[in-house]
Amino acid sequence: MGQKVNPHGFRLGPVFTWGSRWFADKKQYKEFLLEDTTIRSIIFKKLKTAGIERVEIERSINKMKITLHVSRPGMVIGRGGSGLEDIKRNLENFLMAIRHKRALILRKKIEKSKSKMEIAVEPIKEPNLSAYLVATTIADQLARRMPTKRICNQAIERVMGAGAKGVKIALAGRINGAEIARREKFGSGTVPLSTIRENVDFAALPSLTKSGYIGVKVWICKK
Image (cartoon, rainbow, N blue to C red; front, side):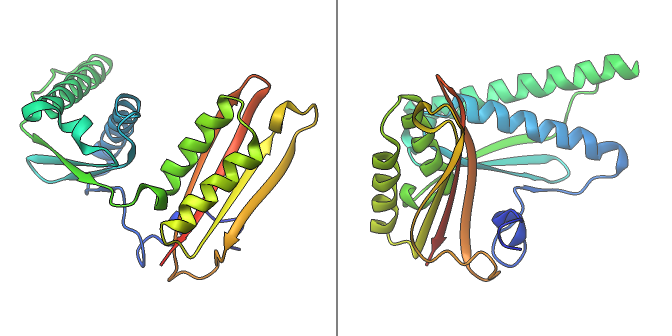
């Protein structure tokens, strides 16, 4: 069972919490869901160099709080908080564009949102224990045609040196430009996927190489 279920979704509640926390009725649910996916796509594209790991969104009656978990918070905040103001302005403009388009489709008057947007930045203490950040570095190095075994072995050394109980890396595709696609696994330590109480971080990313896409999956069992 542990090999067929997303480790993060399998542990929602006991170990992890939801990335979006709000309540909505049938009409507002799809609107909020579309806004959340748009916000995440914008933030991940803009803050890729800052080491963005995840985005948490909380909504109340008149307030929306967005928490950014990044490895380099100085790049996000900027001088005197100018970076946060730019992000906030861009998000508000995108949300207004979405609401305006929705109002045109439904032939309704657009209503100005009274909800205030608040953006907070949370630094990541140990980036080498984040499965998403480890997967992004592996995917970027594969796209630059670096040796596969060296990439994965160095990543495993960094993760285990940061204090993890275990790590597992799986690559699938035309590795090193091979004509036939294959699957390779690298690992160290223990990663119990069937134990719910274990804190297992998981990430899956594609790496676009000259010979096609290579899928990268990373499991990290934290202490």
